[in-house]
Length: 281
Image (cartoon, rainbow, N blue to C red):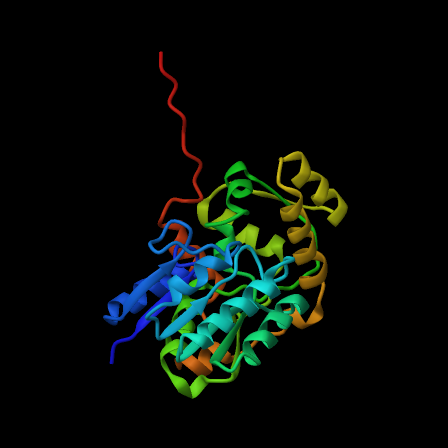
């Protein structure tokens, strides 16, 4: 049976992979983004109704993060519209150990919709598709929370889990926690990447105030500085986030991908090798 499925954040790290998997299964997929048609904008609730029209199920990714001010209001308005339009089910991507995100989870759970929450640890792909790529290319990664032991999760695993729980109603009303199989520090993962690529990549532990100062010096907006500070201080500083879950194996019937698998796979793309500038004579 095919479905009409909305993927909000369908061009992002998890969303685009979910779109690919749904297309392969011959579902009709609509991407919810500012550049899509119809356009969708979290900051403009007037766009919610049109993008939900004719949709059976939806995968919801709130950008930049469920912890930011305004997220709860947006999630409430979206789920109210989804219920009014008769959606069968929604799946919300949430963050492991984020109290503000859990408030958004409660809104979805109390919305009257069938739902599944997918609560994720930090992504492997933050090192290749997000804010940690440029420091890796520069050969110098400075981060706080040196002592944090993080069960980094691969977004390929997240996409597989999301696709399955989106289509199977046996996971309704559940919260699925997705993590990798090992606890790793930032220093350890940077060392793995350096050895795999045969590059010198230094890891420098810094305090959170120093990291905030570095972000401001780099010209990042204040709301992003706040968000990253929150994620390091409140999320990575939470011992709950160091707990490994077996939900990926429970849902998919296979083990979660190890960080070393991600490193070996990503190395082949060449993304971790600085581009050599050719000077013209």
